[in-house]
Amino acid sequence: MTLSVFVEHLGVLSPLEEHDREGILSLPVSEKRIPAGGYIAREGTASSTFSVLIDGLAYCQKLACFNARQIVSLAIPGDALDLPNLFLAAADHDIRALTDCETAVVHSELLRELAQRRPAVARAFMVKALVESSVSREWSLNIGRRDARTRIAHLLCEHMVRTRARGLTTGDIMYFPLTQEQLGDATGLTAVHVNRMLRSLEADNLIEKRKGSQIRIPCVDTLRMAGDFSARYLHLRASTEAQNQ
Image 1 (cartoon, rainbow, N blue to C red):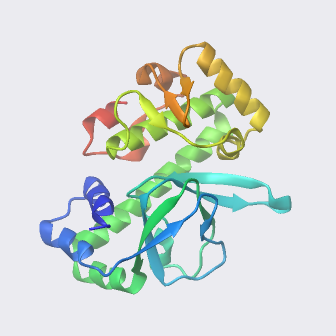
Image 2 (image 1 turned 120 degrees about the vertical axis):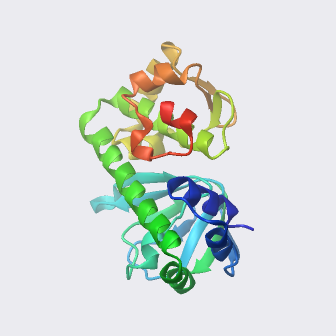
């Protein structure tokens, strides 16, 4: 049942009948563990498998000249890590483990065959791809048009809303293990600038950093305003609470 968290997420994005869910859950799955910092996929490599994150956190990155890195998305349990592998010949980005991770691996051909037989499954994968594009556009806007403080507040809001919607966060404290350097790579800022902005958010009581890579958000609505955040682009139709935040 390692794919259950993924199937639940797909069902939020696009309705799935019980036989569609069972079709995915019955696929042969192998589990793979990746240590923090390890590569789950590398740009330019071909793969015949499809991976789902079932434990831990991961991120996708692109490298520019001189190994300058841009983190382009964060993955939480239930996310498909390499959706393009279903139809594209080679990966166009790296996927790395942010923490120790566990993935569920399925042969892509089996998923493609299932999608051909089950229109609802095919539609769910299409919607998933469209939502990923929506998130990518929001990240482009965040980096291109928001100031540094707003960028960081926005990313924190996104992580809180997404993890709440998956049942990974309850209350006002979330696990957010990105280093200041990694947070800078996700927002187009230097680690020094990230440090200043985090201290600014703390000074205004918008966040409270705690031990164990935890951040307390006293009032999500207040942080949402500081981050120019609306959850619309996440398309969390089945979670009214998350949408309102």
